[in-house]
Image (cartoon, rainbow, N blue to C red; front, side, top):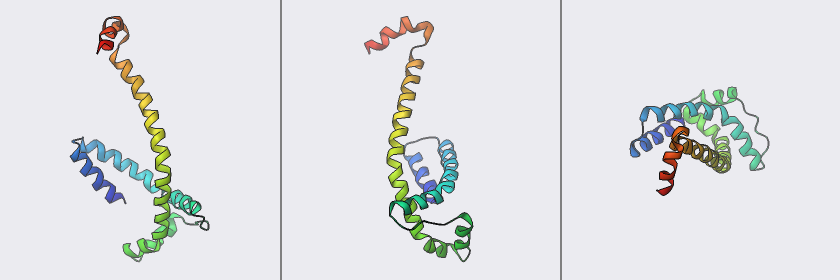
Amino acid sequence: MLGATTLVSLLLTLLFRQNILIVQSVQWLLGLVQVVLIIPFMKFGAFITYQQAVHINLHQINLAFQPGIISGIKSLALFQVYAILAWFILAIPVSLFSYFTFRAIFQTKKHHLLVPEPFSDIIAPKLYEL
């Protein structure tokens, strides 16, 4: 999944003409979060689908991939589906929470940047006329 997200973020960066270095740096930092959260997402996905408890750890994942990449993907496919399901379910509330939180933060920052204190009586009336 890390290779796919790198490619998607690179294509979107080029499409929207953003700074490739910054976007890829953030993507790789969040890739670490992706690796750390894969097992909790697998367990949560199994819980959502009323499956038996998933008892998996990093050592078992490593053992699954020792015969080969394809073998590891096949043996962990159901757990990956659980993780994707959990991610889809959690992405909606987390996205909404993040959106409204950052929107409130940036709106207050924007107001403070537009009207500095010493010039607020001079600039503020002109800003409200726009």
